[in-house]
Amino acid sequence: MAYLSDPKETIAVLQRYHFNFQKKFGQNFLIDSHVIGKIIDAAEIGKDDVVLEIGPGIGTLTQYLCEAAGNVVAVEIDKNLIPILTLDTCKDYENLRVVNADIMKTDIRALLSEYGGRPVKVVANLPYYITTPILMRLLEERLPVKSITVMVQKEVAERMETGPGTKDYGALSLAVQYYAEPYLAANVPANCFMPRPNVGSAVIRLTLHEKPPVTVQDEKLLFSLIRASFNQRRKTLVNGIGNAEGLTYTKEQITEALTALRMSPTVRGEALTLAEFAKLADELGGKETV
Ligand code: SAM
Image (cartoon, rainbow, N blue to C red):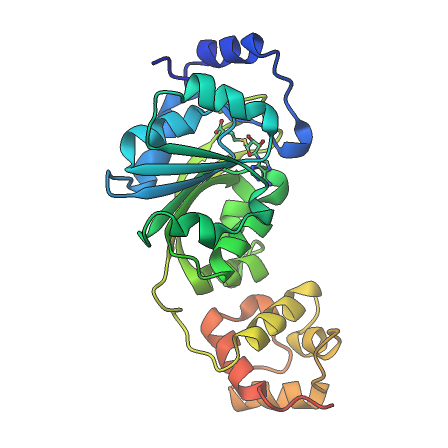
């Protein structure tokens, strides 16, 4: 079996099929076996695992996943890639199922239920144009997913991993950390891809919490408050939440809640931890003005 992590093999496949990269699908294929090794190691894949791969491309990572995992299901949007995967680069893997679909329109729960309820590890070199929607879907839908190990833009990985008081801290950090424990496994330079992306990349693993690290009465309100606080990043939390569409708290109510929690009325969202946002949500819950 010829491994596509050898750039010569990738070029041969691309030429054999006269393949044209589709920019709109975020196609940057991996061409570095060392990086693939790091992804497989970070994901801790074993023969008992079912892996969901999003965007297999020509199958570079897929080959390694099929060799390490029990089963692999790979969802690819680009129909031109399906025959390459199934009739050529991955044809010998009996534990692989390739699905031609848009991951955002796929019933992931139904797809995974075919593997007898076994917990699933998601592994992907994600298309960067759609990274956050894919991750938020995987996290919010409470799918039977154990961990998500993905290549993303370096800047996005940093936003997921960071805590309060840094410039990267925001709604994405809090949402990710509510559902999972992030671990930055590797930084990856642009020359590990074909074609080269014009940003740096990183591999991040999100290990899903069995239950969130904070308890909150109204999860929806928690996320509305978080979004409102970071929509207007340079404003105080009182102004951010007070001016937010869809939230009806008066500035006095927000100031009162902050005072009750011994926080300054001029505090900004970027200073609050997840636990503090949860307390604020509990303090404000049920007090909306209609
Ligand atoms: N896994 C391959 C690799 O590492 O070389 C390809 C990674 S490439 C960055 C992203 C892949 O995701 C492409 O094959 C692209 O066609 C596919 N893709 C883009 N949008 C998608 C979507 N909405 N659903 C499923 N696959 C998608």
